Image 1: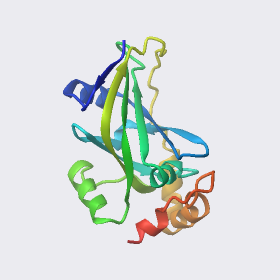
Image 2 (image 1 turned 30 degrees about the horizontal axis):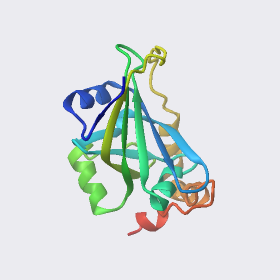
Image 3 (image 1 turned 90 degrees about the vertical axis):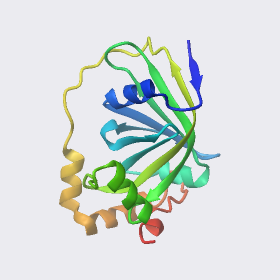
Image 4 (image 1 turned 180 degrees about the horizontal axis):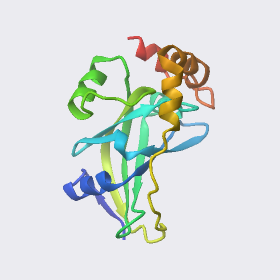
Length: 187
């Protein structure tokens, strides 16, 4: 039932852009595997082998630590409505620092030069393999709306409060791996 592709085909891109949520999975050679839900509105297909998403502040920064340690990253999209399908993007990821020229260029070219409050970095994935599978076991879900708590929280923190939070919660993974986040944002 599964099929493999060496690039994101146009029908894959259309599927990705119709979803509301995706999941990213990362790991270092040792320690915990991380799986996190993300809002598809934050993701852009840059080309047939590249995707990027703006990464908002969270209670940890596991993806950044894992990408720095190992680089492997998988993104998974599931059809929760319509015909069943699971689509995975496998590849090598890296962090694009928030204050870097590359970040500014990507934000301007693909995100209308707008980032939501609390963005700490951008995640870039060079896709080496696209895999689809049936998804017949994924249940139907109805979309009820967006949550605004993270936006309100980030706005209330402000830039100084966010940086303090990053020092406290985002400099190291739960396994103690460095994320490189604050060093990179000051470059």
